Image (cartoon, rainbow, N blue to C red; front, top):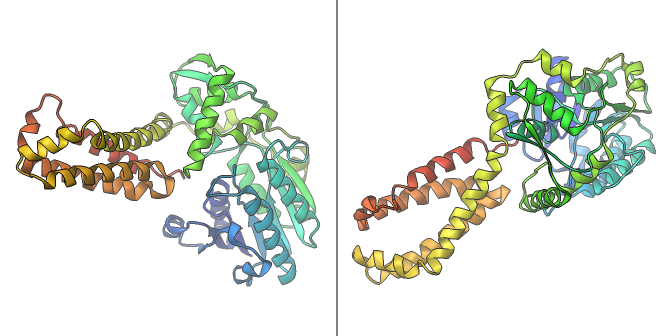
Length: 430
């Protein structure tokens, strides 16, 4: 079959693409950014397209030619200036399924979320349910999959958060967290493959949930033991502390980042992520693997331990670098202005020294803002490296005695450069 996979670079979409290719299917993968995927998975055809940009059914026509089936894995956790749950979950998919109906592409596998048919506390679950209902009205051979928290060898979103929390010296427990039935990525992907066969009857909605109901703390403890670390003390966060973390997560979302700890996650986790997998098991014959079994089958590597320890260090490094550049620029405009001009004059720069200090301050602030924004962080980090090297060279030429200064203004450029390289190395989310 020739299968169109929407959201083909995500955690689920990427695994689905690999599984379908391994089964001999032809895959056309669609995502907003496909550069890395196109270089890494050359067997698939790649199309760069934003589902939210589909304003009419005919916007999908160029991508549905000779397509036998569509698997929609696209999803947005929370609204931000860069993402819209309604545009992706409702409008974009509604036009997609209308286009499928018009062109006769009957087989559609649609990813929703567990529990949306029972409770919708957020825009995420509300729009997921709206998409489900819109698909059900179409004259298509549809199957709706509603997975719980998806975990597997790859880590993104919630599954990455579990690893990061497991690496902390104390296990933080968020208040008001409901039970979870984590489901293995391999079981989810196998289900998609079966949905493209007569084994799964059209018009079916399946809850994909693991066999065990676990608390958030139970899951973190399982990951901690898997990573080879002993028991850690439990830190039960008060509601005000948890609320502050969610606010910080929302703020990061408005800067273009995608932290899993945002207000949507707060409300979704409070209701839990559980369901009845019996229909799924009966229809597909799949016996879902428990989290403990899956972890035991794949011992943790040193790379897993590195990732877990770096998970919370990554945002810390980004925040420190952003604040460092902004604060140095602000200081150069304020109390440090005369000091900077004085150093330039001591080095013989004269009147141009004032312009140099002002220019440098502006550059520092812009670099800091660029690092804070997800869309500009990479070029901003490269500019930070270039500017740091320029400062070292210029400082050596104009004020070489600063190398001997007890506070080490030039020596400290080395650690800043190293930290910037670390930020570049861990920048990818998936």
